[in-house]
Length: 231
Image (cartoon, rainbow, N blue to C red; front, side):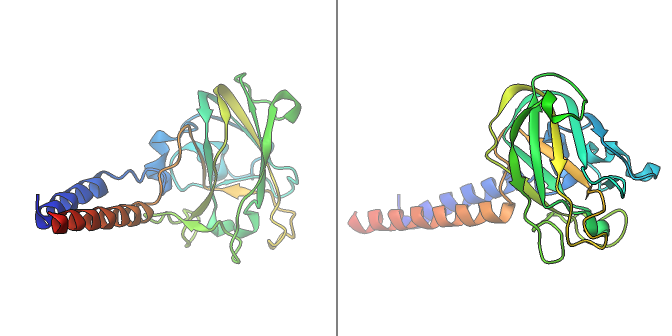
């Protein structure tokens, strides 16, 4: 097979792969169908006293915000009603409430389906830093962009990956750190647009996959060219 034919075949394969590349984890609505938390039971230590900020917003696949109460200095939430291993958990911020972006999370897990908010009822998984930008939001913008339902601004996210939460897990507990840079001086309960969980590695952003495929294609073309010259 000559070099031109090889390049044509590889180019067609690249196009097919790009068209079928999954992007379900790159924004809230497209990631929600594969999220283990989608539609599950949410129990929170507090809720901002307005119906529009209810706990169910955390897992509903929309940009609706969930806010803990202003005075909740130990914001804690459980998500229960599933049965799965967990390898990555993604936290989406709420840009209309930057003072509430949690900079860290402590994760607990249980093989019991429970909604209690006491860490002693769970097994500690670990404490993780959630990377925030200079504007007190997470550092990866949703793509396609999700816009805050409570004001202008693109929702961003951070992912805790490499988790080894075992199969048969039926509930998790999250305890969030308070944003020390917010207008509340660290006295506002945390806020989120969504929390999603997956039992396999989260797909890379399509741009990263495209770059990887292009590099792989380039390598294959070089090999094909060398073989053509030798022939």
